[in-house]
Length: 235
Image 1 (cartoon, helix red, strand yellow):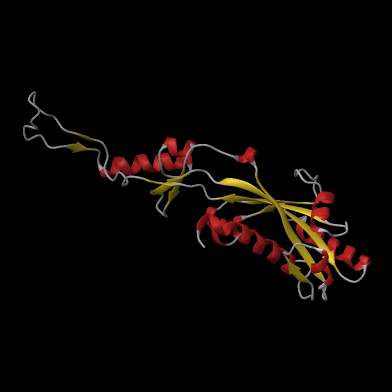
Image 2 (tube, rainbow, N blue to C red):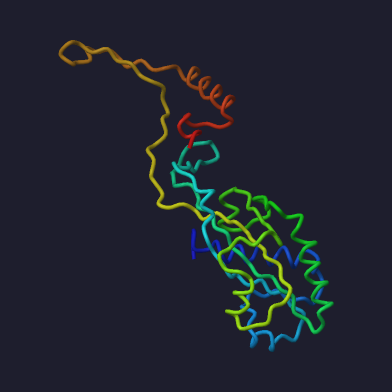
């Protein structure tokens, strides 16, 4: 699977990695992403943290217009695409053991692990998300804002209401379609004098010198922090 189809399970992997490498490192606690139904709970025979993805919806406040340029190491535009669309992935995180006190300790460990991770930098991401070079917000135990209440979710699952944490990761999905761009301009503006009848009259084209073109590029980079046109910087 490629491109935008990979993002949801990449977020699953990121959340699993945060928990496994955090407070549960070296323990026998399992991390699952199953629906916590009665039948599932009855089959649990090991301490488990379950992160059930119960809601996916776009964060429309983050929607942007225009185009984004994809550049190579030299700053040359290779292609363009629409800005990424951001989606809120909401997880119902629960702890499952034999005793409620142990479950409370496990939920405390989840809080201890995730609270410092309000923003996931690109270096902590993998796959498609890492390639976008964007930071990903994470909230834990915040105000529940989704359309369905947690009580409704437990009722739909057929289980009994129990302590849980609402973990929301807002992830970017790569915008489509992609747009091709023309080849980069390698010479400065050229001027050629023609006769009244349109013939060049052996007048060669005169271009800006390579030195003046390079100086202009350096001045633009110094001012804007990258190469490219002002229009590309605005988008």
